[in-house]
Amino acid sequence: MIHPDVIGCDIAKAHLDFFDSGLERHFRIDNTPAAISAWLDGLDGRGVHIVFEATGRYDRQLRIALETRELPYSRVNPARARDFAKAIGLLAKTDAIDARLLARMGQSLPLSTQAPDDPARHVLARLHTRRDQLVAMRQQERTRLHETEGIERDSAESHMAWLDAEVARIENGMP
Image (cartoon, rainbow, N blue to C red; front, side, top):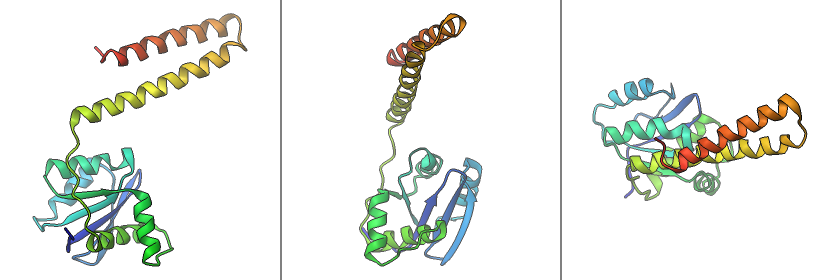
């Protein structure tokens, strides 16, 4: 389905840039739950469709707010958005331009509406990421172990033991 009243959103760690195709207006808000909620309150049931690039952790607050309010959105692959930009001859890249581009993409292409994330899947993904971080830290300590002695070696071994226990705790589903 092609959506006529689309809001494109360029997501950054600290802020969200929007282009509202219905109002032909660009604006920026903080990427915080409070700011997102206040913005959504101002939509007044307009029936818009939100389009943004999948940015991992930075789009999380927006996704949660949209899903809580049961508002439709499309989370698009960044490479697909860049391909669309190239196809329409848009080579410049700023937050405001990207937001407008995503709105235009939502108006022009039949984007599928994102289904809400399964909360359990989200928790598992975060635990998986944390486990990977701990395993990487453990490998760094193992590498350092060959260069240490005395108190440094004791500290590295102690830290590796803690990392081993934390990885096991995550693998066992955390207490």
